[in-house]
Amino acid sequence: MKLKKYSYNVVKSTNDVSFRKIRSNSSQGAIISNNQTIGRGRYGKKWISIKGNLFMSIFYEIQNNTNLKNLTKKNCQIIKKAISKFLNMKITIKAPNDLLIKNQKFCGILQETCFNDNSKFLIVGIGVNIVGSPKINNYPTTYLNKYTKKRVDKLLVFRSIKQMFEKNLKRRD
Image (tube, rainbow, N blue to C red; front, side, top):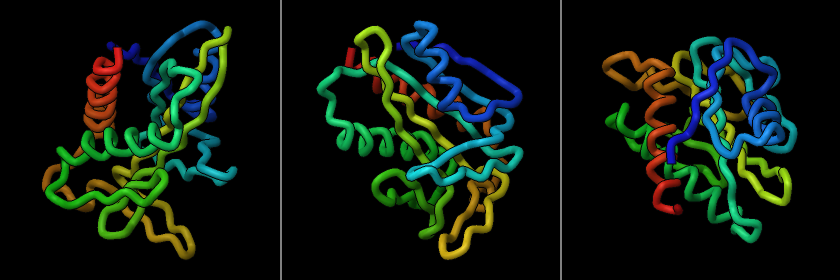
């Protein structure tokens, strides 16, 4: 399955854009934005968006009876595999939805569901710290380029994640 790419300069949240696309009858897609003004995390926490980092969402239709806990694990694995190509280091998953390098968060994933005309959709919001990371009390963070020999561009990471989702969604079809 090929995911249609939607690019923006500034959005409040890539997940919010995904909701709007679904409501306007888009069945799947990949959203990317240069800036995100009101990115969010789990439990209403704010995702701090630093310029040059990756802000994206993938959305697609799922079955009404899909086990979301299993899908969360699978999506974390997909994103981990896509990003692993840029590193010679181990990436760990901190359940349910954070990716870590050396026990420091560099990627957060926020999954949300919505319905449109009796169809259920999953939105996978992905934030990857590529060029910098926020300072958060009692929660160590880091960024991808701190551990790469060659600087990685957010569009390369976006393409890698998008292609990995396309490959895995194709297996479902």
